[in-house]
Length: 365
Length: 90
Ligand code: SF4
Image (cartoon, rainbow over all chains, first blue to last red; front, side, top):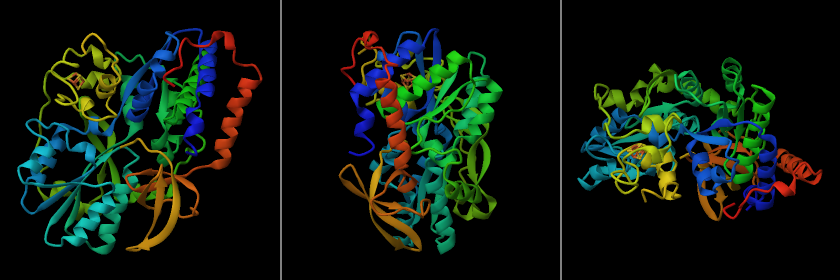
């Protein structure tokens, strides 16, 4: 298929690898932010093909993994209500709350439905005027345009039986949090290509400058990832803390202006909890006051609900690149994709699930 | 949620005042909202997230960067003697 096959060309990939080997004269630690990239790196064995001096650490860019436990608990309470049709992306249904998940709510009689787009949830609201339809609006900058449009459209049409439970997070504040943390080892970043498709990469330029790290937006196919790693290594070797785009077919400096405009009309920046990491200042989006009628948190009065994490799970360290999943004592033992203890084991984009699926630790499996 | 592969636009229509379309994503046909890429034409490829087209693929850019990488190889920048041990998985 066009735009796929040429980026899976083994010959080109092999040659990019050869070039990385030649350019890397010192050890470097590079973080890929995006869970989709983590998945692709492990699936294609890129981490094992790189020279030993290049270490890839996996970042917090899995939306399912970082959605805080309190948001999950709020979703469970709302989904359990008789008058509610609760809608969500499929991968949120198995995320464990403190005692159950959305699938269990469904088996107990709750009306929980998987949708592909928040506009589908809005359609369910049009079709069911006597029900309250709630959409679980989670994700990074890639889902924010969709969620903003659903709320905008609901307001425009005056659809009052629709609301969104918002848990939107943003990448640059998380990068700053990682770079400022005491044990930080990250020297360069592969930036998430599709987040940059929306937001562009101008907001990474001050991060690169302040922390003196190269940042390279790239895609998800092997050739994209290797070209991104090659550029990052070149910049590191040259001591060049710049943002260089390696995903030109999708990413421009300013991103998608129409999407950015609607995001800031509907949402405002707020502090957000990240599962496993804690609160990061100014790292999330919340509905603006004008749209409070579509805010499920207010509509169902669940803001007070809080929750605390299982002490066994070390996903906070995993998400910040401080711990490899197979170093967690529960990995592959108490915690598997069938019985996940933490969110990083639930999602296919989670680092723990990717390690498990691609057998990165043979001792415990 | 963030894994997205490009889809090819098949048709454009209006629904509830929104510009919508159908795309072929690797053989399966899906509905998407086109409000964020109003200039898109049938036959173009786009990145899709949560049912929204977010970026029209830049064909020229794509061809150029592939050519650049290819040239790098042909100009001998890569040393075949130093090939990595195995690329089976790629
Ligand atoms: S292996 Fe399981 S328990 Fe350990 S960090 Fe990952 S999700 Fe948490």
